[in-house]
Amino acid sequence: AVLDRLARQRQVALRYSSPLGAAGPVDNPNGSVQDIAGVCDPGGAILGLMPHPERYTSPYHHPRWTRHDAYRLAEDPPGLRMFRNAVEYAQSRAAMAPSA
Image (cartoon, rainbow, N blue to C red; front, side, top):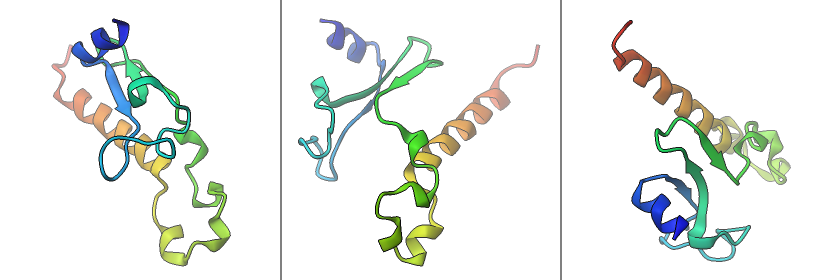
């Protein structure tokens, strides 16, 4: 009932998935129910998540970084992209907010 309420209120912020859609055991490493990876408060300001994007903010944090070619090392890792996207979103919301 709680998960249904969270979904209904649009508080399920992130789900594990695969390129083909529904997540399998490899795509959902902790086996969370309904593949939920993150939830937020009703206002969307507070996010709690199980994956740890902060652990992958540098290409050198990847366990196989020595096997990546130079092109892959030049890309922003997914964890860093997630934080940058969050900052850009917050800045865009702040820019749209009426000034006090």
